[in-house]
Every structure is written in structure tokens, then in C-alpha cells.
Length: 144
Image 1: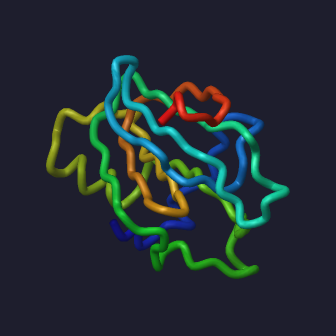
Image 2: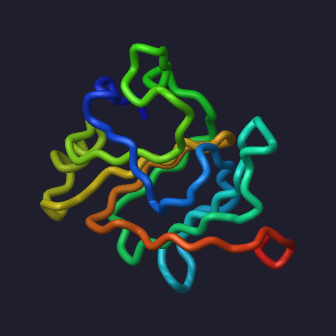
Image 3: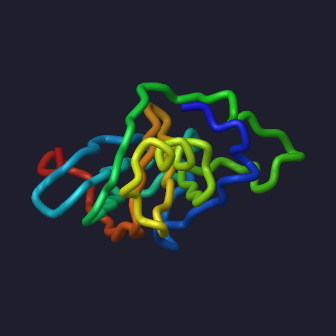
């Protein structure tokens, strides 16, 4: 979904101090313990890739959209773009998507955030009134 004012509306979000810069989204959806996003490190420089999978869990999600794309025009960056380095996690309160969603759905809590996860394989827009918990897991067949 196109965000016309991405760099004005979104800010870099650090879900945990030890996160990698770039991830593949391995799984996304509701599970027993909440709404789960499982991310596998996917930096193009292998030496920058962690061995651990990042697991984000929200107790409450108002809406989410997963887009099978790895590139959006509003994410074009240059050296003039603030925080232009590679990054996968962003958050916004005044995003275009959240504003439109509020216009069509009057039961949206006031403190709702728009989380944007930019994976190398797909992108996720998540609306929630809480931040997720972040944990790390060792990558292996039992995770899949």
C-alpha cells in the first residue's frame, strides 16, 4: 500500500537492540500465543547475518496486510533521505493507511500504531495498539 509521505510519517523502529538490518519474513499470522511474525536474517553481506531468527508477537492486532513484494516506490532512498541505511522495521502513528483505516472503522483505539516490516521477500503492514514482544530463536527445522 502506497504511503505518499513515508519518510515524514514513519520513523525507524528497533524492536530489540540486537536485531539485524535485513530479514526475510518466514511466517506471519495468528498462532496460539498471538499474532506472530517470524523473521530470518537475510543481509546480502553474509558476515552481517545473525544465526538467530527474530520472533515478534502481538497480543492484539487490529488489522494486517501482507504484500508479496520486496520493493515499494516510497522506499526509494538516497543519501539525502533521513536514516537511509538498510533497515526492516518502521512505525508510524499518522500514516496514510492508518488515517484511511480510521475513517472507515470508528472503533480504532486512539493509541494505534502502524508497524511496517520491510522484508526482502514480502512486506507487512500491521495496525496494533501495542508494541510486540521480541525474542530470538536458533534457526532450525523445528521452527519451520
